[in-house]
Each structure stands twice: as structure tokens, then as C-alpha cells.
Length: 218
Image (cartoon, rainbow, N blue to C red; front, side, top):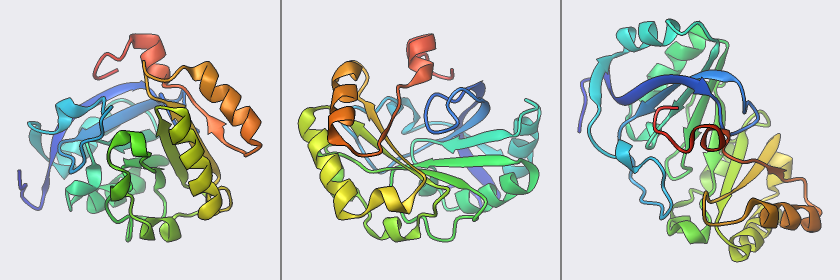
């Protein structure tokens, strides 16, 4: 799946409301890159593991600009699996005001343009991929960045509390997000755990799933 140095392999580009993170509800252009080295048990974008189309960076910037919004999200798959992703992020930041990167936390976030808002997953044991969390990435996070825990059980939530305390996560970034695995953990249960934990979690639900029933590209 190697691409030339001027092209990214793109699964889809679409315009929708941001469903997660602190910018939830913002009209956003999503650029979904193909490929991911992880296989989380509850992954909802497995369709982007393969396929996609090679697109020149100039053409991709032009396509993105046609939607007329300053909010851009580079997602996957795992965007950082394609080395040219970093160059593309720089290009995006030079043209658009709000650029975010959704990443698994399994690949290094070093040398990412400082203007990018990083939304980094911290994989819980229930995902089957918690051993892939890259501890060194925590030191690279800036206060403007965000950490996200997707949880499937009370055991996952207890683990998240332990990790947050162990690595002082609430002091590292502006928002530490928790959300339930869609269709597996009741949101009301997670809400009660958040309240009883006495920690400054920011709970979120996936807005796009509530609105469009998990339709790809929405």
C-alpha cells in the first residue's frame, strides 16, 4: 500500500458534524486515510483498513477547500501510518484555521505541526490493543491536545481512572474524554461512574451515530 511521496491513500473525504472531541457539533471536513496497524475489537472504521484512492496533496487540499469551512479533521484508520501525513498536516495548517488529527496513540506523535490539535486514543484493555499504547507520546502532548478513552465495561473505566492518576493525565491536556462503546456499554452507566469518580472527565457520546445511525461518511 506504499504511496508516492506526493500522494496519500485516501478512503473518503466528506462533510459532516464533528461527532466527538471538544469541537463536537462543528461542521467539519473529514479526510479519512486508508490503513491501520491496530485491530481494536470494537473498531467502527474497519472498512478503511484497505482500498482507498491515491490522491495528490494539491488535489486533496483543493477538494477540502471546496466545502468552505475552517474545521478540518484528519482521521482513519490511523493517519500516521502514512509518513506523508505530517507534511499534509503542515499544508492543512497553512490554509485552514482549525486542524485536528485523530490518532490511536500507537505511533509516535513527534514532529507533528504545533498548530494541529491532537486527539489521541488511549486504548483500554477491552479493545484488545492496550499493549500498543505508546507511553512516550504522553510526554509529547500539549495542553491544547486531547486524550480519549473508549470504554466497554466497569473494568475498563476503573483502568482508565488508574491510568489518569498514574500519568497525571488531567494535568497534561485540556480535555480527557471518555465515551462508551456504541451498543455495548450503557451511556447512563458511564455517566454514573464519571460522577462518582470525582475526576474531571469529559464524557461524550458519538453525535454522528445518534443522528445518522452510524452511516459511513456522515
